[in-house]
Length: 282
Image 1 (cartoon, rainbow, N blue to C red):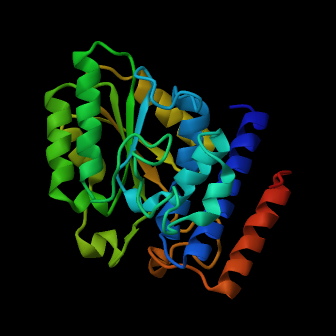
Image 2: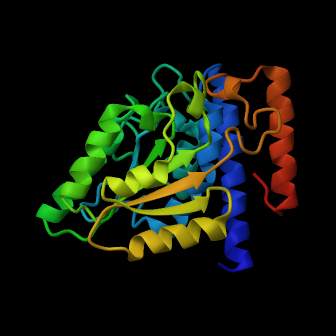
């Protein structure tokens, strides 16, 4: 990836975190930790990978994206707005009564959302259904789904993985945001999913790894996954919970908490400084 492309993606991801932080602050609730860890992944998918058109969000031939860890939607909403699916003016209204953007993705009210999600484990199952439908209909679209590492403790996730391998859904790409933390603490302390790569391989997946905050690493992993055929693919993304805001990074208490006014200003200023360093503006 050339430096100009990379810089553009870094600017977009920084903006996504800024808009998400504002929405969560205004709502007085939300999930900044996992939203921020996934921001770079959303950015790369929507600006470099997914065949989607904001002017025709329901195109039957579009690629699909399912956010299985649905609570981490604030930065996804930001990217969708930046991409043109709806107005950026909707972002500060996050979780407000009657607003378009709620605490979990709603496919009926939000353009660009392919599946309502939130109950952990169910998103990947829906993604498997979409991928199977594509096979049956001889469609060329791909289905991408993003899970959390804590979410992988759900039994339904592993049922879906078995299904995907059994049906040879090589049009399915599962991305796992491994930030190491979930609502009750460290993933390894709560349930433990390692060795995740070996388990995925044993379940019939081609497995790749990436640094979820480095766009060169993301591109290499996604390209390798898309070049694989004959079996579904999984990408393990190493990330930092709360990425971009210093006092949130790697802190479990920011899984599902909104900043107060002082914290909001500190976080906003940090992200604005990062944006300025990248040469971007809001």
